[in-house]
Structure formats: structure tokens, C-alpha cells
Image 1 (cartoon, rainbow, N blue to C red):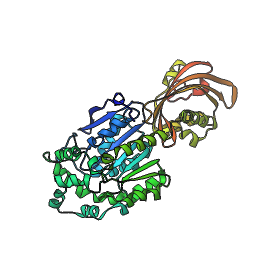
Image 2: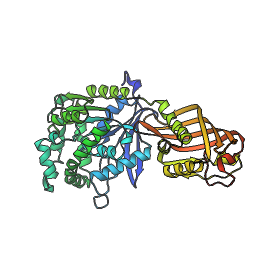
Image 3: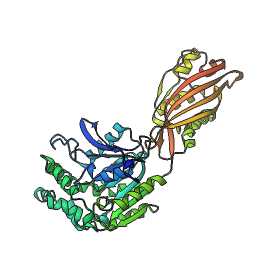
Image 4: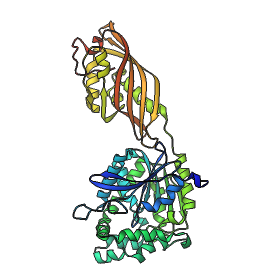
Amino acid sequence: MIDNASDLPRVAHRFAEVDGLRIFYREAGPVEGPVLLLLHGFPSASHQFRRLIDTLGRRYRVIAPDYPGFGHSDAPPPEEFAYTFDALADVMEGFCRALGLSHFVAYLFDFGGPVGFRLATRHPEWIAGLVVQNANAYEEGLSEAARAFVAEEDESRIRDFLTLPATRGQYEDGAGDVEAVDPDAWTLDQHFLDLPGRREIQVRLALDYRGNLALYPRWQEWLRTHQPPALVVWGRGDGIFTEAGARAYLRDLPRAELHLLDAGHFALVERLPQVAPLVGRFLDELPRVDRTEVVDALHRFALGQDRKDRELFASAFAPDAEVDFRPAAERMGVGSELMRGRETIVDTILGLFAGRVDTTHQVTNARVRLVGAGTGTAELTALVEAQHLLSADHSRHVLLKNHYVCEVVRDGSRWLLRRVRIENAWYTGDPRAIFGDVTDSGAASS
């Protein structure tokens, strides 16, 4: 929130390369701040969020992209790009990867609902929370006008929705305060709609929209299963998505916060002074990263080895994890290879010790640095003291003090090791207690 003009954020206007497309986006706020991804609706683009970005962009990392075919993003002709909601979600998924976004609150408005729910069902670990503003996911939320639009197959009639009166009507119909609706909003929307080739793009998306209704049950199941923190803000005068659609979210998210506003479909444009504080408070009240949970990934790594507990040990790693013991092995004069993939790591390390070596590990001096508080990635460094004793003869052992540098990623409520590099500070004893008598071992552990 802002108190005076000096608190206005710097807003950057950039492009990201995604699958050969230049995707325009606006970004403001601290790189390490909580991330709010703003997913726009029809017939608008990221410009609909300009005032919200100004309001929230000091405290939060706010990012608003334009979908392909919208706003300032590339708009290849339909012969070169399949304009479907699956395709829009594919590009937004690539956009998130390009910016390193792997944990964020998603603001869903209108078309942002089908795009955002596709991201959520593909990557539930990405979603820290939802702000749902007139984005429908329930049959009862469809007005008669919306049902007629979804069922329409006559392209000429669809094009009637792409005219200036129709665009203006989306802003003013049902509005509680028409004077609060900036005419620049619908004028700018129409400017982009009138660009060469843009109306054909919108026709293709309109014909594809009915596929979203078939996915409503899947999205509802995702909400019931994952129970994301949610703020539902709805213009109750919306002639497209009705108030019943807003209330339906509470059926699957009973702890969601619901606010019904005297506004139309573009409630944010009309009621920014009400909506922005709600969003800011919602972001402030989200659970913060517990650094002990980050370190717990390394404790599972250690204890899983000591107990020879395959399930516990595997729970420490991301599916694409890497463990690099080569620096420590080299210091001890033995060979090791980079281990890739959770199953390979678990099989290799537990197989190396099974029935042969007893181990104890102690994790100390752990430090956690969040790599963007909203990205779900952290850097973990620690000292790990590890003792390896031959099961048949405990007089043969090696004691090590190793320095761990780890990349840790969030997966829902847990954190997982994705990259582990192990360097040896010192050791005493016989390294063969780890590797056996073959010094050119193909794998090693701490």
C-alpha cells in the first residue's frame, strides 16, 4: 500500500522469450518479496492491473503478463499458433519457468481462471494461494448470457462481442459506480482488439471456451484436495459470472474469505480502493517460510541413511535431484560419480551401505537463504558430521566433517533437496569404511 507519491514503485516493462514467442509483462516490487502473479481476462491484458501494481508493488513482487494474442505480446496468426486455453496455459507455464517462479499467489480474473487452474492442477506445488476475482469454476456461476456465448458456434455472432459497445458494456453493465470506471480501460482493450488479426484470435478462443466447463469438476476436486488459502472478491452485478459462482467456492474452500462488492465484471477497475487492501492483507497473512522445515530435508537425508529407511531417505529428494560427492571423495583419494535422479540416489547410497556399514550423521550450523521468498527455492548450507563403521568390525571406521551446499525446493508443505554438493573439511580413519576396498568407487555418500 502507498501513503504518498514517493512510495510508488518502479514498474518495469519487459519481454520474456517463451517457446519462440515474446511475452510482454509488467513487474514491480522486491525480488525477494512474496510473488503475486496477475492473470488477466478478456478482452483486456496486463494493463488492467496498472493501478493495483502501483498500490502493491512496493511490498510484493507483482508480475502481470500478457497472453499470446493479447496486449503487447506476440500474436502469431492462428495458422501458426493454436489459440486454445491449453495453449495459453502452456505459454504461461513456460513464462513461470523463464522467470523462475515456482511458488506464488495467483490472481485469477475471467480468462485468468481457466489459465490459472490449469497451472494449479499441473503444478500444485507452485500455488501459495489464490485471489479469485470474477473468475468462474462452477456451473451455477454461468449467467444465461455466458451460457449463450459458450454455446455459440456462429463466428459472425461471436465477432459481435468484439465491438466497442460490447467491450464497453463489460465494464459498465452491472457497475455500482459507473463514474469510477476509467473509459481508458475499455478504449485500450478495444485498441488491441482492433489490431490486424486479433479478432480471429478471439474467435478461436471463444470456440474453445466450452472445454473449460468440462474441466470444472477437476478444478473443484483440486480445490477440495489442496485447500489453498483463498480470497474471493466478486462484483455481484456481473452479468457474465454471477454471485452464485462466487459463493460456490465456499463449498470446496470453506475457509476461503468472500467479499461481494457493489460492482460489475471488472470489479478491480471500479473498486480498487476496496480490493487492493483486501489483497494486501491476504498476502500479509499467508504462512511464511519456516526455515526449520527447509533444514528438515537434510535431516531426512541423514536419518534415512542411519536407519536404512528407504521411504524416509527418498522423502528428502526432489524427483530430479542431484548429489555430488565428488569434491569430498577426491580429498580422500577415492573416486565418485555424480548421482542423478531420486531413485538412482536412493538405490546407490543405501545399496552401498546395506548389511555392510553402520552410520551416524549430525547436522549442525545450518543456514537458510531464501532465493526469492515467493519462489519456493532456498539455499541451505550446513556442516554434517558423519561416522561410518563397518558392521562386522567397528574398529574400522572413518569420521568426516563435510560442508553441504544444497538447493532446496518447496513441494506443498515439504521441502526437498534438488542439488547437493558435498565438500570435505576434514576426515580421520579409513575411507574404505565407506567405499570398501575398491578405491575407484562409482558412487559415494557422506
